[in-house]
Amino acid sequence: MRELRGIGASPGRAAGPVYRLAPPPVLPPAVEVVDPAAEKTAVRAAVLAVAADLTRRADTALDATAAEVLRAQVMMVQDETLVDAADIAIDGGADAPHAITDVLAEHRAAFEAAGGYLAERVSDLDDLRDRLVAACLGQPMPGVPDPGHPYLLIARLAPADTAGLEPALVLGLVTAEGGPTSHTAILARTLGIPAVVRCADILDVNDGAFASLDGASGVVVAGVSAQTVATVNADRVAEIERRARSHGPGRTADGHPVALLANIGSARDLTGEVEGVGLFRTELLYLDRSDPPSHDEQVAAYRDVFAALPGRKIVVRTLDAGADKPLPFLRLADEPNPALGIRGLRVSRQTPSVLSTQLAAIAAAAAATDADVWVMAPMVATAAEAAAFAESCREHGLPTAGVMIEVPAAALRASQVLRHADFLSIGTNDLSQYTFAADRMCGDIADLLDPWQPALITLLASCAAAGIEAGKPVGVCGESAADPDFALVLAGLGITSLSMAPRSIAAVRESLAAHTLDECRRIAEAALAAPSPEAGRAAAGALRRPRVGQGVSAR
Image 1 (cartoon, rainbow, N blue to C red):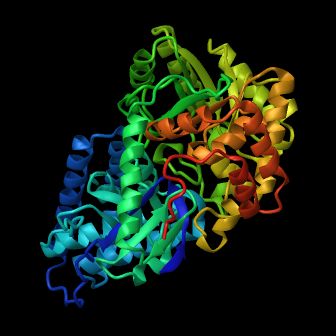
Image 2 (cartoon, rainbow, N blue to C red; image 1 turned 90 degrees about the horizontal axis):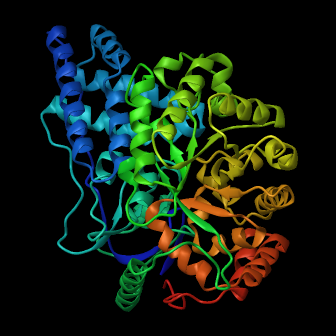
């Protein structure tokens, strides 16, 4: 047996034989171009074919998040600068497949240099390149393998492939590249498929070999026994069946409430029973267009979500985009470090009309329904920014205004921020990245982004304490909220709500229900006092009640 390490991207355990996605078509040797016009026509035909295929997949996707991700890819492949640059390359002597490859290689290098969100889109560009080259060569793109039985998929998997995965067949996913916030990881969590990313050594494992994975810790064990595979999967089936019977609000064993809310991108993501929405990602409405959505379009989209949950809390995050998540209509200048530049609420410094239109649309949609609508801004760094945002919300008729805590400066001054904000919602993904100066795409320092890092837990504890002192709610909407074990730490710190992909709610509900608030507090204290993430997990594990199947070795 061999233990491999990556980054946990979608919680859960799975085991089985591994199979990998077949390689894409090989780029043939360059040929002499005798008819540049024909090569340019071939590029345009490939763009149309790939865009049509991705649009078809988006239209038939069962999940709204998958559909929106695919539409974002359609926007990328239809970008006029791609065709224009390919034309220039063809005029320079390149044939259509090589022109596409060269142009996207330049885009790839730019995305990698930008880091952060854009670096996590590199795999999307690689997929578009492969699909365009295949279309130029008249070859099909290879699909997901179908060995006739459930398996673990090893792949540099693209969103178009991930969106169509069947959880009953693909038990787990391991990639050699990508990050926990890549499109592939997001879709795996949405589909409820355990996943580990950035596990480079997985490529050394042969097809058909047995392996197990833990999507929370990021550990993959190659060479496990058939008995281990059978045991892990039997536990998984029992757990799925048990969670299907789980219902009701989140609360500890002694009745302390911890609201379990859903992270969504549109009304289509509202599956199953949810207490409310803790993160409504409105940027998905903006992704597949070169012009911002109109006031009326936004009202309709927001109203669909609000009407689906009458009387329940829905926390709307205003547009989270900018230099690191570029949208054409924002017309933002290139920046040397987009992750630290004009993004989130800072976009309103340059284009205030985008925020004011969105707030007006949210208010109009809220007025037309019975939902309890809250609004929050991303990337708030100071109490002054929180005050300005809250005032703008109230001017638009939105009485409950909060902010996301993603910047350490805001976490350190949480008490001052709460003098103006009605609530806090902690985005642990970005808060980790900024606290540890660690790019989420850098697999070599993935350990710094572990939510069990004592420094991060210290910031979480500070925010929770500020909320308790102010008598205002403090929630967590980062990926750490979906970890059933870490949820106990958060509840023990005093976090009032946890927001996650809907499929993750049942496991967290069960974990909370098995522990009293005092037990959660002791677990939180142990994690907070630990010198390292590993020690924190171990200390918390010693105090935690075992879950069904937890005692089974991953080996």
